[in-house]
Image (cartoon, rainbow, N blue to C red; front, side):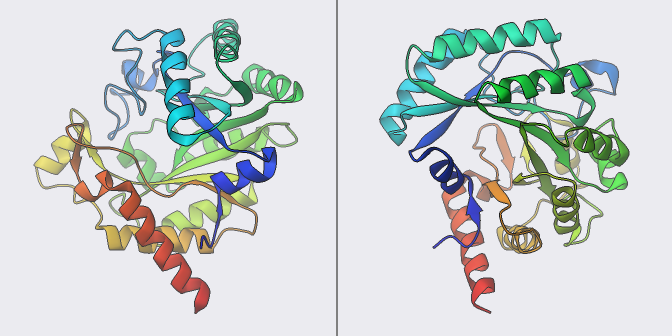
Length: 300
């Protein structure tokens, strides 16, 4: 039995049926990766945290058509949230972003019902006019989520990750989202060198106090072709064991307020893109280990 408020249970409560996210790649890119800040984050590969569909030349229409078919067949979901995932979805002029979103909704509605939208982005790529646009989308009755790559609220960690922004930028952005009709989800990373075992818990609790509703937790893992791979091969970075990661995530969830939504407990990567740690490839096993620890904590 789950001892936390999962994303699936939230969706069931919210819509009364099975709803699934469809991940889309607009090819928006990221200014941080495009060379403005020393070539991007240490962990990011050429796919920008997504499917790489745009790099492969797969059109938005084909992404939606094939993705919706897979979701219907595998998960039996009859409604979708369109998730503009790869790189930073807001790294487009607002007019172009709005056109792409409207196009995606129009294409997706040929195949299924759309109940929400989600946008993956960075805290330094959310100007007020973009927030206003998301607010308008939420006002149209859609469940709108803005997923911010926070990673950590440690200044030292942000520098080591080569994020190109500081903690103040995160706080200022999150607080500009107050009293909006959309919701925030924060991505946090465990296993950053120099952090103690409670840093993720502190970051999550602080973000929740600022109004963040949901969280995605990830271990720091090594992808092929990244700057982090160079650190790993040189022996300057050692990834977390599964047991240590489960301990850190359990502590983070235990420190969140009741009602906080956990959208993801761990990462989703496999060889040949994944270099280390290999336990990341067994997502189901990692989730089971974390849930075992949560259950034991709940009983103690």
